[in-house]
Amino acid sequence: MIPRGQTAVSEAAQEIEKLMGLHPKGFDLSLDRITRLLDVLGNPHRKLPPVIHVAGTNGKGSVTAFCRALLEAGGYSAHVHTSPHLVNWHERYRIGVAGGRGQLVDDAVFADAVRRVAEANAGQHITVFEILTAVTFILFSEQPADAAIIEVGLGGRFDATNVISDPAVSVIMPISLDHQPYLGDRVELIAAEKAGIMKPGLPVVIGHQEYDAALEVLMSTAERLHCPSAVFGQDFMAHEEYGRLVYQDEYGLADLPLPRLPGRHQYANAAAAIRAVKAAGFTVTETMMEKAMNTVEWPGRLQRLSDGRLLQHAPAGAEIWVDGGHNPGAGEVIAEAMANFEERQSRPLFLIIGMINTKDPVGYFKAFAGLVEKVFCVPIRGSDAMIDPVILSNAAYDAGLVAEPMSTVGEALEAIKAVTDPQALPPRILVGGSLYLVGDVLSDNGTPPK
Image (cartoon, rainbow, N blue to C red; front, top):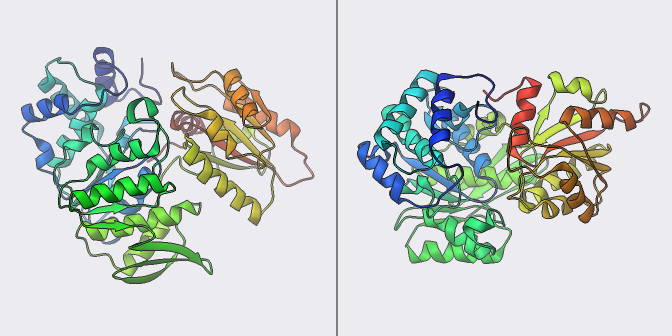
């Protein structure tokens, strides 16, 4: 069996598939197993370039993308670790290249690292995510770079990446309800888990927070640990003015182009990245910031599909977006982005949604009340944890939306085509609800991340 989303049986994918047959799926939050394994491997996590360590419920991937764009705009090389992947496992590991754009890890190098880590583990109890985290440290310690941007997998305090003891900066992005069985059922409990990546006396950047309770926990933790802190809205900020992004912190003000990533929520994400890269000790010039706003990319997050195989099923001229946001907080920012698109150009909005059973579908759908013509609910290919499209449709109804189950994204696009008025503006279509579904869509469309 090829891992979900994998389109070709690469050497590394085969090695990971072996591990998935031996070790439990999912998360088992603890640092004991990863610490033992890293000790056998010679503690590669202590041999990394300066680390920007990123946690949060939403915005982790975007701020990571902005940090990478900033560093590369300044000629710095940056290793980048993110999870999960959309189509190929290799997307989790971008290797920094001196003076240029980082590249996804070479398959042979990746496969070798997986084999070495598996051999060092010697069959002991561990999760695949922990093994892949150890692979991160092997890859990033053995190839030179100016920085390593490492995204937390789940939570923070007991996440496998939190063996990093001396990050150049810790970054905490927006916190909302998600993964409640692991992290708690209140935002302040989740914030306490995310705050676990802060280290005594080391810098922390706190991104925009919707919930005062979460912000209070983060700020009190930073104070208790004597962390030099920078908080969005207090120590740094960003807003749109006359079609430009104005960024300001204690170092001054910058007049920048709007970020290439769509959505107003990206202004705060861009600001957090600028402040984080500065806090990590790198010189950040206005020229770097301008270039980063124009070059930043983050596949599968409000990404527009302008070509590809799936578009043949859609109404001619339809505006199609994919986004892997899947919790109520993500639903709110995505819905806001759709509302902003509607203000600029009015089009009927349809959703094609697939979700897994660890999410809150009603909370996600409520954000779209009053915006959506109809929701089409689809399965997620190869996922044992998917919510049945009929049940997902009922959740959409509970949130006040009209919904219908479908067998595939292609079938849903055909259904939208069937109700589209050829005399009216073509519709706007959002496909998402799960990064797994987005990965399937990008794979089927022939436009995987590079």
